[in-house]
Length: 623
Picture 1 (tube, rainbow, N blue to C red):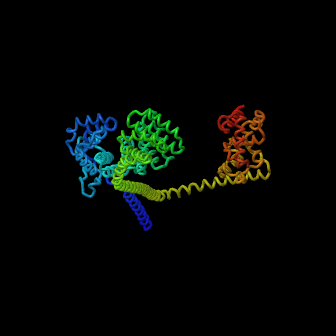
Picture 2 (cartoon, rainbow, N blue to C red):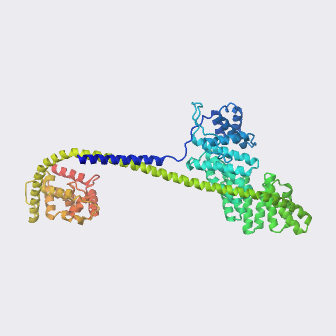
Picture 3 (tube, rainbow, N blue to C red):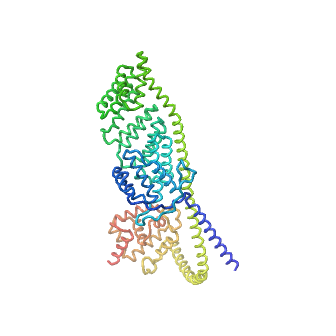
């Protein structure tokens, strides 16, 4: 009674432990991020406009304008429509005319994903939506689409800030868009429109930092854009343009080898050489060639050729600026003056005008024309004032970039931690399942063992009589074989009913069953099971008796067979394996296997040797 009670108690403890592990695993597997409630159904017309936006922005804008009022009857669709309108105005080269509505859309989409815009963080914002009724015929927008819309809203809001010269706010919005995408999407999900969006966001940041000559930051974001351009089926000159920009920043940093590497990569991705990007890269590589080798003639030859290919005034001025700069460094000031003066008088680029003014001022000083030198120095002093004003912007932009990278690394660490927690949770679930199954099996097994104990005892009693009789017969057979070994001859006894029932054959099969011979074992391990010459002779006589002079006729029909081959044939007639024969004959397994192959060739056997020898034995018996 007490034993039964203890058994039940132990089973209950095992089940309780398994249940506890299972509940703990469920807690560990719960996602740490909040689940976004579904919003109301978006308008089908807006979804159509959104799909057109990425490929045909002009057509998409016309469609949106025609259905704008009809699609903005609900709060969700009103904000969605204003976001699309801002994106399409930008893609069609129009200024944003709906800035207030767009900023409301930013706050609204942030509320869907539990985020607050940078300017409103901590102030509450919109309450999260609990779902809307919408049109049940259309599928509601997914949670991932909420995050994508929120990121797009921040990005296009940044575009609006940049158009209004609010550089810091624009940078902050671009970085916020990246944070949303990087934190809520895995890399395998960043394809199609999402990959295109990230490529554009990184490119805008590259351009923003380029405008302020923050080379390291511009290179940083440009390199992040490259994998997404590679994913897209967009024109390859987009990627070439980015690679060219990276090369130019390395050139300005005087890292000429890196610059040349990216220029060559940019040329590699260009579909043909008719693009201006190709000519720009060729011009920059000519400057690099001059910087490295000081080869004036080669560099000027390239620049003159590119100047003759210029398709517009802006391109021609860029080439003339390079030519004038080369002449300036060669101290050929008369030639330099002609090209630099032309650039200064005609360019609309402040950077080009500034460089030309700096060179012209120094040439004027060299020529002793102080009045003209002062005029060009005035341009330089204006730039110095602007540079002082930009210093604060540089510092603020650098701080934003550093903070973004810090947040990015933290998000990656958080994601790794969550994945590790999920793996541990899965392991705990599996452990709980295994413990539960094992506990249940133990209970079933113990019950079955009890029910089988009685029947097992009865079977033992019944078997004991049969085993005794079998052991007596076996002892008698062993005694007969032992006597044969002592006499070294096989006494002539009455023939058994079949070849397999012959005493020597039964002795062989007993040794095979007892030895359980393995092919990978050394045959010498089984030396106690080896057959003597007398036993092999008895085996041949048994085969001759049952199969009409089997070994004699084999040696006559197949003269190439040796006496040992005949012994092997008799053993194979018992359907023994090569491992069995290796142990009985005390021959290496490989040797026996080679003998098997040889005998098959002799008999022309296409199946097992046992089957081939059986066919021969039946043929001899019938003749």
